[in-house]
Image (cartoon, rainbow, N blue to C red; front, side, top):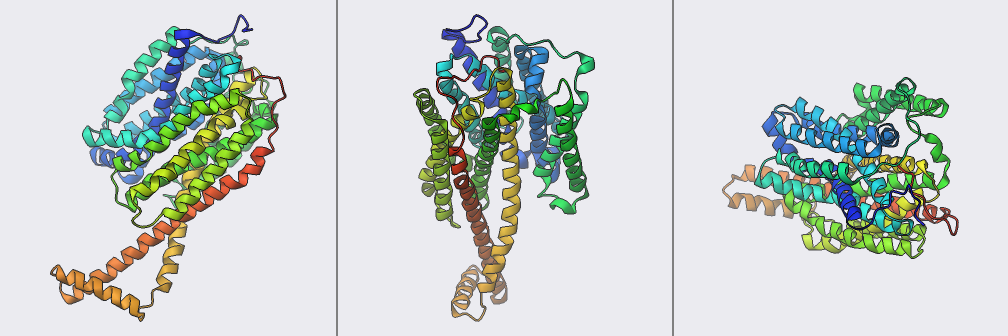
Length: 526
């Protein structure tokens, strides 16, 4: 029986609330990747350097990761419906301001504020959808929410590529405006707020904790986003921010465990399932955002594809995930254990990575990617819902909203760590592989001499002088070696990510299942 104060909805109201929450989740996640393909156009239009325009991505990520842990507390302070609507409005207004920015500094500031607005949309959307469904359909609710989280990062690059090629870069922000306006009106009309305990008086608000949290995660996100570009610890800014991140993390943990009304309830992490779930969410983010980053990079940098072609390659995997989500929801409703589904997802993701390791060459055709990426789509479908429900399954009441914020933040940080580590690892491996390949090229080898001569004659046939043609032949050979070293570094990345997921399988299977006969109480989550 549904209690009188329940937020469960039925009929058209539930459909409208679900669609509103999904649109908001998609708006937030698509905007994390849609900008990537427009960087060159922004750079030329705003007269910015590559380093400066990179801040357009970094600022949004920092705004996101700062606000996510505080969403539960902010919902209590202002009421969830009001906070959710205010976040959509901030996101929408900043989208307009981003499109209208006349300079790079303006754009960076508005992207940070857009990230602050967007950060709330993801976690709050999850709770709103979950609470709108009765307990026996909560697995399906997680499946519906998962569509936005998993499909969103994949939709960004092809959508951004299409808009940039056919219109101009400001329109990647303008498309948010009509959806944001509609979502705001529907939120104010249909979304309900749970009854919260007494608000924290202004004088008792944990301002010190808020400052430490912003300093810690903001510094960490900057280090992850900019570390590779700035050569890590050879840069003074990275060193200073690392020290700040470590000390602010220490004092933040101390503050939240000792203050009577903490901004983030760290004690909820005493729950074993949530602890494992936050780690798995981190690894999920690593694989999700890491693979979304590396495949378009490989196809554009090595195979010479356009941004739209690279983005469209990922669409079948996204559709596969979308197809999988309702099936996984039904399996969970039927009593299938989350651990088994998540372990199967980890195993299939390993197969996807090993497949990628085997097929990558300097001229792999698009057909070779199809089934490999379908495997990725299946794996992501199997991973997201079980990990989320496993994380929250033994929490009650307010703890559920706090747990959802932790898993959301860790998924985001996992993506940032993944991209930072992949970029650095690839740069190092490329140097190693190039050195190894060059050491194997003996100029006295008949095979090498024959190849150089063939390339020399090819350049001479195009009208180059003998000496110039020889230099061009050596340059072409050098380019070929560099390209092969790059491919080998991509192969290494695929293999190590696959091994990471494979190693996690035993730990997933060891997670305790919730007690028989109990149901996940999402009713008081925020």
